[in-house]
Length: 544
Image (cartoon, rainbow, N blue to C red; front, side, top):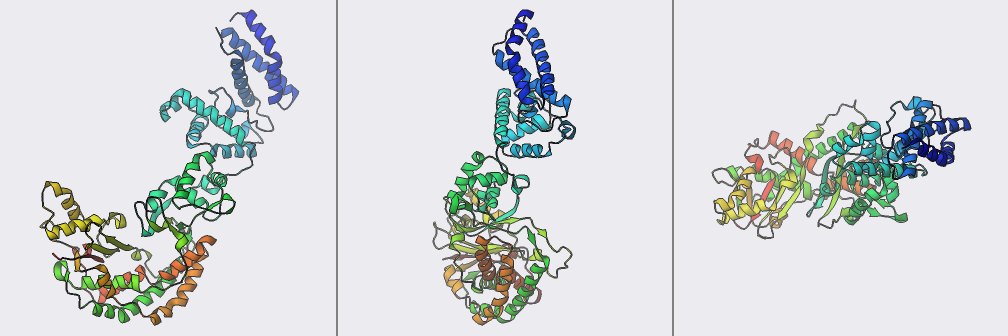
């Protein structure tokens, strides 16, 4: 561009540039310095340019760029403008790592800036981080994110706009926006249908949305603020979780949840005392209840036991009786705690979180890890109404995969094998492979699980219930322990925790303790082959 035209443009835009400098500055002296710098940059750029299509946009880009350099060089402003280097429309502005020297008294503003960055979408947060914090160029960001350069620039400009708007809002990022929870495992009690807890909450954002309303009911906007993201980003997820029962709408358009999250802290002493009482119960059950169960099923003879060890059947019946016919009762209605997803199912959803021990120096007498279990697992076949099964997985079993790997089809395949309709050919190769992987069928085609002829209802009806006087003996302790346990939970969950804790006080851990005693003093040790069928019963109208 020739000098005469450049002089004309400078004359035309002088007052606008000076107004821009006044707006950005904290004194008239500072405004004059900034205006001088911008005029110099604009004039030199005009002389180098050939043809400029959008002259006004061109001048304001240079003005913003010069202003950002001005901020860097002066390092003496008393605050930070939301039109500073982060919001400049000139994209190739460097990120200044030394905030303390760049902006002397801006700790509060920087905190607000970081807060607003957290409210950007994940994609825009990433771009802002790469551009300003990693000092990558637009081209490098484009390569790393697999987005066109124009798209990266568009997101960066949109991010600046959203950050400007956010500066006018009063909000804070919650704990979950900085330190989101991570599930250590998922569980359910009831019918999982086509999708148990992990299907809906294995997504980290879904999980944290639900947990954000666990202790305090929140609106959609409050959930977003707690998580440090924009409401638009989670709106569909919130509706999805509500439709499937994981979020429940309450007064004031707020949400709560009845998902059972385990506490973030636990007491070794509290767990130890509970297990000690349960061990006392187990010892009494061995003396007073086990003989009655063994006697009740002694008449059952239409059975198939691989290897012929009758104790395997006795152990399964004892375990079933303790878990299902010995429960205490808190007599509370838990219907509202059952989740009914649109994909089917009706269950209580559980999420286990990593917990910190509140009394790590306490020396526990009991081995906590010995009492894990997965059950009750009932399977019924629609294809063959005569076929069903019951099982609970514990340390006494060798089965892998827990409830998710316990398929109704396994028992249907076995039934077809028994009645002779499962030919050993290429068409059924996958079925045979599955049965052998589960070790339900040996390599020489021997069935390796227990079968009882008849229905499961008929068999389980023979198992006696624990006498009421025995239950009453431990009811008070169970209730006191449950009330203490409920204190770690939010108000909407306390009825559930009390009822669940009381109802399950005599449950699988006690049954495992009974097995510990029996296999140490009464029963012969299980072989590896017997562990395939330990605490697993299949029922059908025909035996092998």
